[in-house]
Length: 490
Image: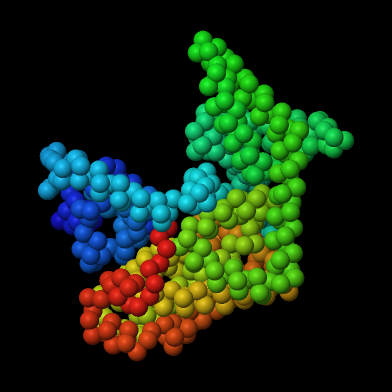
């Protein structure tokens, strides 16, 4: 049997069988399942599977399989579900028991993850995450175009590459507006139409309060605010508009009201906020880069665990829009370097734990490319202390990058999403490209080494080393088993 199909076949009964699956999806590293009955899942059995690097419970039940693998296992998993004969959930409880169990699980889930801040940040992420593939593609093309320009090669191709790299960014506000309206329950195309006002060249002819507008003023933040306003205007109209007039008047009033507020208010306000974000980021790294890098690099992994890193997505996009790159991403990428160093140290500190060493060997390639979830959920978080020492490595790498920014060599990434070695093609900055690459590589090496040393010498108590080296089965132990606090689920 094909190994991907075998993995899918092993997972299916451990999540309650085909009848317990309501929906299937996957992201870069995780198989995401919507379940009818969470209690039918065998968490320990899933963690024991060689292909499974960890499990995470959020709004869906998530099984970490790693990049590449998850894209191959998911179709096999869906095929197995489709081929199964419909049957009731095994040992189905009564309706009253199901209702009580569902209410209990729902309450527990809400208590952990459904705070207003997290729900709002998740919606913000849903707006910007679909744009990441285009940002990556256009960012790499922009880097290639810059390289050809500096070398004086292929002058006939350079204008074409510039158009490919810049076309999406010139209209990114429209895509943000479209996704915002879609996410918040409005008509997506109306959100895009209102946001398009921001990038329309004709706004340069408009004067308000003695000030001239500029195309693009307010950027993605203005587009987000404009589309959100359009959603509320549209919903307000539909509450009282007669059905016979709805198709004509609701879109007209939505675009008119939201458009006027955008032109004579939101573009100015969002423009000032965007400028303030860019100025603050540059000032922060120029005046206290080493300290800022230490704090940002050290705290990024906990932010990811809490889901608060999603608040940075609009900031990254704003900086890319303004300066062509985000100076924050290379610093934050150092958290992944610390995680890799910590995992290597765990590998050498647990020579007799075959299970966890196998997990590390399978997850390290993804970790070097900036995909840290397999190492986080399969290694450092379950063990507890290595997660903290991984943060130490991230702090050291961040301080290294920040120091060079403080010395006048500011650089960043032309796109968001990639990290680790995958960030090299997206680097751009104020100095020579070779220097930029060397500084970023130095930050990675600092993060690797610091994470390794901190974990090797301080990542384990004597009792942890004894237990984990003599009982390989504890490689899949919970944080409580390893003496660490339960990590926040995201």
